[in-house]
Amino acid sequence: MKKKVNLNDIRIDGGTQCRVVLNQAKIYEYVERMKEGDEFPLIEARFDGSTYWLTDGFHRYHAYTQLGIKEIEVAYLPGSQFDAQLDAIKANNKHGKPLSREDKE
Image (cartoon, rainbow, N blue to C red; front, side):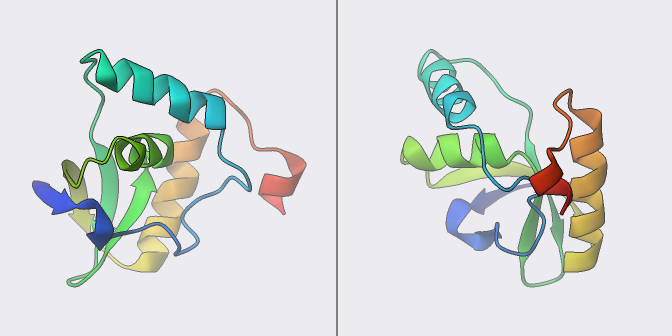
């Protein structure tokens, strides 16, 4: 499902970010590309009936916030915070950069 959601309504503190540290250079790159009009995939979340838990798109999320964007379209599925944590692990496995030792701990 897709829906326009206020960024403030998307939780990023629920243990769904597998990385200890986000790649600030990647966020900056996304900011610049967004300014140039590049389109990005929708960020993904789980919705438990009251909260959207971000599962994929943390770098894009932070780029949107740096640009002052208040509302974005989100791809979401119904599910719990735990479902979101599982989805985040699966999403990270799709990306090319492996988890560091700190990330795994």
